[in-house]
Image 1 (cartoon, rainbow, N blue to C red):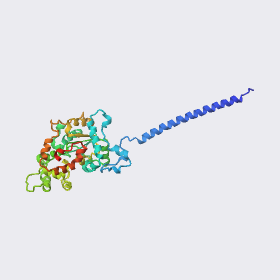
Image 2: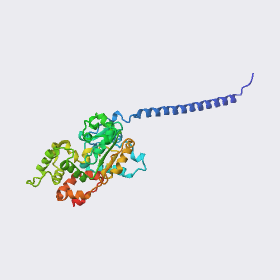
Image 3: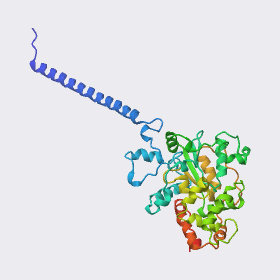
Image 4: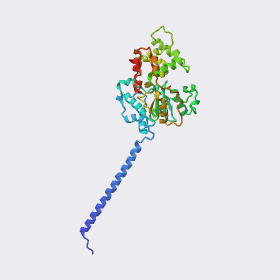
Length: 374
């Protein structure tokens, strides 16, 4: 019989046992890695929202959001309210900085506690009625009358397919909401409103607040080109009865009467009587709620020649439609005209008017009209 060395046998078993443990350790490592990969995939699938719109975000912005009452889901809230469309700072690092500066100015002004009453408003039905919808191209446009809005409505009418070109649209159809094919944001369900506010490209246009008031006065009380008799026969007499200083004066409404009405902190009862007709002179804040709705782009009437093509490009529709030709010089700020209209109006009345529109001046970067106030 062959002799077996016990020492060799022990060494063999030791080597076998060590290899066995190494294989077990290696298998355990592979198992941990495999489970980690499965868990990571599960987490990704669980938290990914394919529509960018989860059930936890069914909060509809129909009320202002006080700073001290932020929702626990603050991350979701900020994502819903941030600008959509193309994120300007990320997609176009070489873009003109003016558009980013405008949005930054609004963000900073919205945080100023001293301006809060002039910069914040509820996202009420009044605001939602001002916002026109183009579902086909995912665009929301907030109407700010007396700032070239008729032309932007024409652009949206074409995009919505009601007419094939801007030139084909009859003027009487543009403002006829039964015929122009422009739905208002207020016509959708609460979930539909919130989804569009979150995911659509959003914009509106502003101009110098005092120059806009002059334009509104001329359009509604002097020329009235669309023949809207209620401005002269109902609204003007109501303003004259309350705000005209010289009761023996028999002329129609004057710009001074209009300024005194707009600057009166107690004008609300008249505004309620006038209804939605006040949209032509109410503040941009009340029309579009820029501190509650985070817009993608803010255009300025004074630079519309550059802003209009930029907006069309950012909305992804520049290959489909063009903004109508802008007559030379029509968008330029006219200080002489402003001085002429305010000539003879008391400093007290002008200061009260500025106090009402101060939010519009500061949110959108317009200079305080010291040449009228001092």
